[in-house]
Image (cartoon, rainbow, N blue to C red; front, side, top):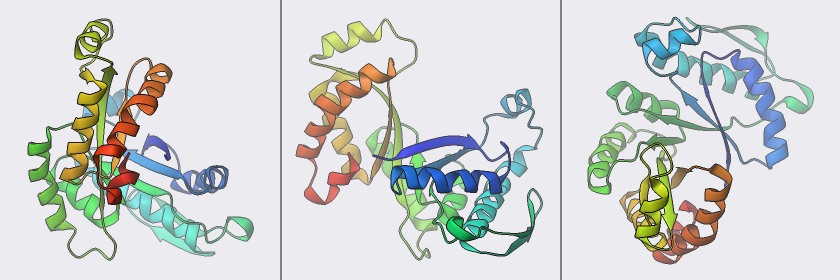
Length: 236
């Protein structure tokens, strides 16, 4: 499991985020990762004080990652872009030569796919059915053919699992949202199908968070591991 923190590229300095990442990487022994988001719709961004135009969102994420990588891996780093600027920066001493956190990006537009093909470690899809997901995976794989290292695939999915489907549906009526509902066996089988389609990481959500995390960890993930091939064990 990884500690995945989600934020938008508009929230503060890429240099400061990189400095924080060094501490979190030490604490988690290299399991710290970034999910960098777009900030939502134009209206959602403006409600948070971000007045960037739609066309600026993807390029700003790319610059954010470029600056973060530069200050982490170079003792002296200067960069001047459209959204970020660093003059003679870079980390020294115990902060120097630290790896960039694993980068998770998402989105289903052509621009989002191109960005992931260029700079992401993992592209996270929304919860499409496995048969629809395969077509989107092919689009991304075509863009990533010239990468020096593989682009991994992830899936964000809300789930509610119980001993039986009837129990799951009864409990689902008490919570808002639209999770995937089913028995432990049904949810495990669905996740295994996603692994076979090419998914290597899952970002699973449920409500209430703590109790459902225990249920998934105790009843769903062990079943998924039994269903998938040995080479796919890490996916769960």
